[in-house]
Image 1 (tube, rainbow, N blue to C red):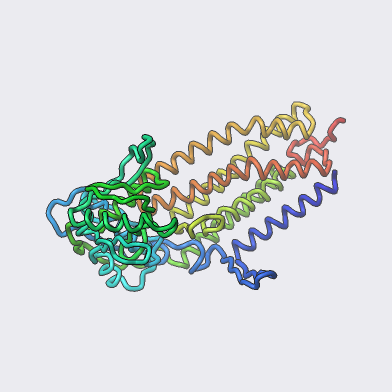
Image 2 (image 1 turned 45 degrees about the horizontal axis):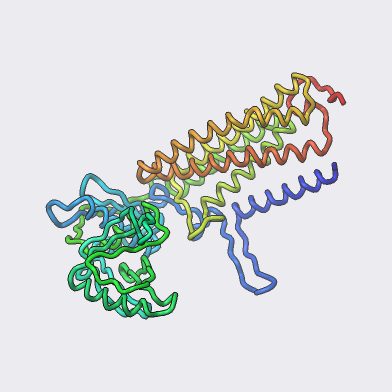
Length: 441
């Protein structure tokens, strides 16, 4: 049993070392089977790691407004979706698009080289097209679609309900759509599609199963309310009845800069080292376990925020509030371990065996840890939902950090403590109890 625990600890430390090394330095890997090279960037890699926000690298602030008197809320929301799509197409995934008042659309774009070109791109009229599988244009948005809206309701004759997009076509669009859907419905699966393109970027490719000859038609799929609204706004935005005019354009320098970033990270490192030392002194063997779990937590948070383990190339944008969110979640990770270890010490003082004390300590602390973390996650979700810009950055890093801290405290810490128990160390002083006595058999 003891040798299994030793091997388990060695493997855990090796995995932890790999995670920390990847987060700090990254590495290249060549497959021995295919010869393909894979690049795993460090988390602060300027091109592929955690992106840096406006307050760290500077950038541009662009504010646009409709060139009409009284645009509707739906039209302004559609314009925001067009701007968001165009920024994503240009690689500005970390840009923040928000609405000021009822009509002004504000885009904050970090690390942008040419703000004049960007504003011309964002102001240009959106081009919405419907094409067949071969790229032939069926109709364009302004002449073919009168209205697009997200709807929840029946999507087939059986009465099944789901989120979908309902299109209202013009007379010209109805005729073109009827001819195109009849042609596409006759094709084999995979080719029987009508592609919807916004600025030559495919935003949806619904399949066609029958000829559609009516003023209205629907686009179905695995939509949520949010994804259906986004697609409807994008389609609607392809035929905005107004152009956008420039309200504000200014370049901003980094309010913190790379030097301040390094200073902030150094301060965080010093704080983490102090916490590691405190846990080791106060709780001894469990403190060592907590230190290993905390290092695992830090590595996982950094890798998740840099896009590791995440789909679609997700990567967080690092701002000063975001750094604060990570550091706050580190404190919560330590707090969870403190609750667990104090419960273990209480059980040892009552005369329980070390194994029983560990089990009861975790069981007694679990509900408190879950309650505390869930309330913080709820707060992070609210901040993300209703906040903008750097507030959302803080909410994202805090939410991700707290979720991972809860998992490491509940699972990693417990797993490592069980491995320590397998070493058959019975001196209660090593578990934080002042009186150094051997456990009674």
